[in-house]
Length: 298
Image (cartoon, rainbow, N blue to C red; front, side):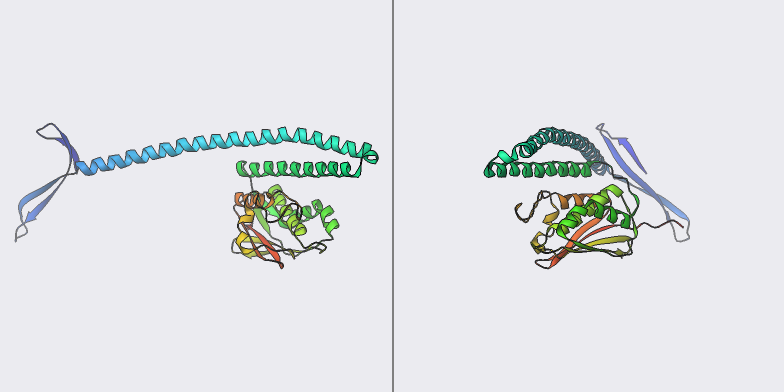
């Protein structure tokens, strides 16, 4: 039993008491005894721990609220800035293209080359802005998931990449079966487009991309593989390539903005999955994404 007492100097103390009975040799009660222990220090320590815990919880909650607000402001700033950048960029592209189309025959070759460079870099900046928007939305927006047909999503990605496939004369083999997974259809489509686009792009010049897409089951997960015959990735960069703006090659060799694989990584993470790569330099790479297997309830 625990209770408070006031002693002679009028200070309050917490005490714990317990009592017990002492029997004699004939098992009769011979006397009763008790023990009283001052537990004021333990009580004070327990109270301090509770107060510290409550203080820490309040601080965590306060900082969480501040962080959420900062994220909202950052998302709004990124969205606003990106849109503000897009309008003048579209004007630059439009007027540059108009000059080339209307006055191309009158422009010196060197000046025409400059205009072509302006147009090409405008397209590159436009792509960068769009990818930044996609990445920001990937981080902050809710991503609802449901059963998704892998075969259907892969087929849609091939349709969207048809021009690049034809230009590079890429050969893509899709192997069955491709089970249902739990994912977001549109987000997964973007992921597969990014992986296939990289497989088409990162090959030795004048070599036709050879790509194989197939799935394996890892317990309750489906691992989708995108295998290529590309230039490969040094082992020390296999994790870094999934970071934002991480590029291993100059833009002249392989154009891009270094966000595609970051989008893949963040998107798969938001769909409760994982991603990775197996690769050897000058041999090719096998990128994979792992998503929960969809099972119908019997």
